[in-house]
Length: 226
Image (cartoon, rainbow, N blue to C red; front, side, top):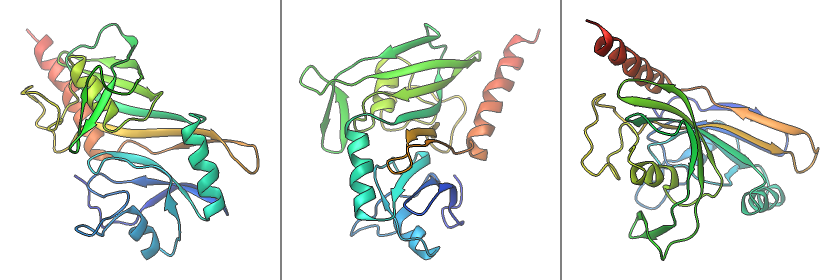
């Protein structure tokens, strides 16, 4: 896990909005019991901005923030209309098959958890395999809908819980002993509400996740050796 006290990386910024690389371990928006958050850290860096969406505490990557209320509402509308492309990186247990596909399990949120249920809301997650290792798969994931813990629940229900998953792993053995869930909000792609220009913001993979990928690759080499 990285040091959440380090200065936040700004991966895109203009006079109305910015995209911040949130480290794992930091809340997007704080609460009474844990006021430290992405927003308070931005304020400490002299930046006044409000997050338009949230990432789980254990998930790193791109968070879109608005610098004023009008921009926040415009960006929130884009999220509601699914006008942004949200691309994630993930490392999942096992060999995911087929190599490209989608999970479409309805999700119901209850008591701080999400589960697959016929009573749930329609949910869709697209995935593409980047690398197949002996015991894990490196995935590029696109969120079509944005339900609570969607990727984590879909992956686990599909039989391939994410490496480091402790909330929805269902007893799966994590051979890499990951310090956190292997999920990273890699890219945000959208049309700027004011300029109309295409914005493609990318947060590089944190060292702890790059290290997990190399461990999965090394494990494959060991298994293939005579």
